[in-house]
Image (cartoon, rainbow, N blue to C red; front, side):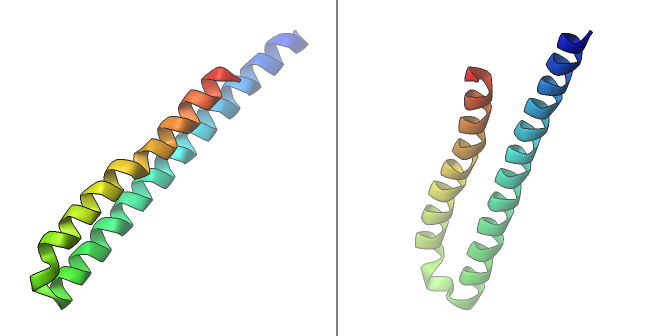
Length: 75
């Protein structure tokens, strides 16, 4: 019985950690996009460069949540 409770709480903790990692990645993506739009509104001639930098950062931000998922599965 105790072993089942430990396993259940471990699974719950892993799911909670993965969910928080995904939430953090979503917040980071939204923040990057909003700052890019803000920068483009201030300096329209820099829009292309800002877009490239934003796409690179949006590609890298979810990698952190993927690392969290993979590390949880390894442990």
